[in-house]
Image 1: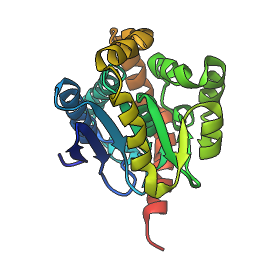
Image 2: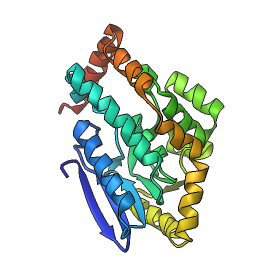
Image 3: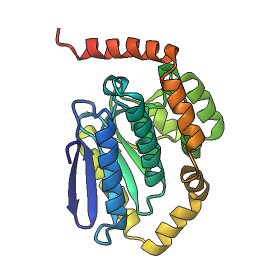
Length: 257
């Protein structure tokens, strides 16, 4: 795996996103994460999964700099793979906890909200979905997933303006479940997931699937219309212009003084 690091101990798998400073998601990371999560879900020797990032970043979301240069076929495949990853994660039957080690906007927030529980490091970090200001269409499935945790009204309002939340705000609205010191984010996540793993697993997993039934049905439905919307908007002239400005800003921030 080029973009992920995996450890397994006492039936608990930990996947660390490991791509660059901020873990931006490209086609390779999405494919690797999909394959690995599917493997963990079917491995009888693994009872739970923690997903984490690195210091200061869980994931900054999609790698706009790389994605901007994809051709139309590459971008079409990327959107299909990303929507499929969301479906795989939403349908994951075992306990899955996000150990959010730092910033988690956009795609990072999508990954986190697929999990059953979210522990986030204390600090001046942000989390939320800001697709619309970037020029990306919000799929219905992502809205439903967001609303599952924070309620439809708040999800609608925050998505409409692309609002990002501080750590304390995220806890207050139910977007995350717990705050801890950055150095203890993994141990805190492990404490929670071990509680899940100690319960009757057949009952726990079937109950999880029952409680997520509508999310799972929608995530696994035909996504042709959603993919058409995503692709059309991505290549719209106004979106390309907006992306150019965002990418220029990102490159300036990354450049040394």
